[in-house]
Length: 320
Image 1 (cartoon, rainbow, N blue to C red):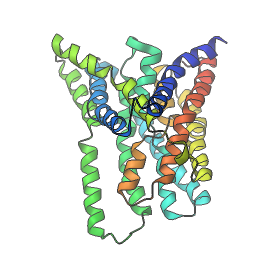
Image 2: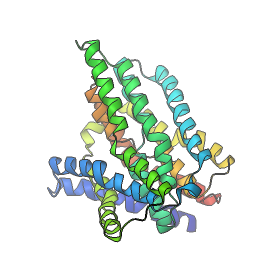
Image 3: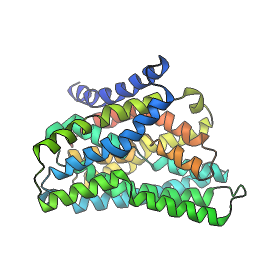
Image 4: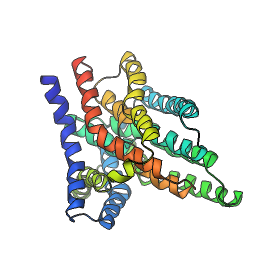
């Protein structure tokens, strides 16, 4: 019972914030424009600032964990490879296959990773979540570009346009605010520059908005009708996202000696809800987008329960 209460305390506040976002949208407190603004604000400012603070305030020279980062990189690559093979069995339509693969591996790693680690460990956090983001998020984006390009229908678009789109997307990865926040935070820590009190106060207050705004905007964009379309491949992708990847790779992580914040960060990387950017990228690269939307909706609804289940198991065996 103690382990169950621990798990519920870690997941329910996060899940309830998404529920509140859904309720606020239904009663008119948050409309579509407001949800888009919240997403944009969190992605471009609040979340990068939170990641910056998490690293800038750490002793990065001593907190760097090369083994952990390498594990995140290798597991991300292996996950994508395994899902691509599975997609050949279950998904016959070429366009849907690209959306299925992307939706099955791309987690809301940055937002939920920080939220879960901070919710469980609070001020005792040692900057592990940003290291997980560093090891996984750039690969998420790079492979998404490749997969969606290979599986997209031409629809009359020239190869020149695709090359421009790929170039713009890769540039977007390099200038990604989340990645920039991590890099600047790492450099700040390595150079050991003290953060002025005024700057510390401002960044702390803006950073505090990242989790509640981000989670409520996810809830506000939830659409049950969209989730009901393409239900079979969406359910398979959601099962892979919330359960299968964790079942395969978590025992390896535990066997390698990862514990505490490391395990929580790995759990979020493997088994959290599919990121909303999957739908945006799929639409921009010539895909229909309905399957991506369905996967996002189902995993967003389901992750509150699946993460509670996994936290209960991990707490029971004593690794967190």
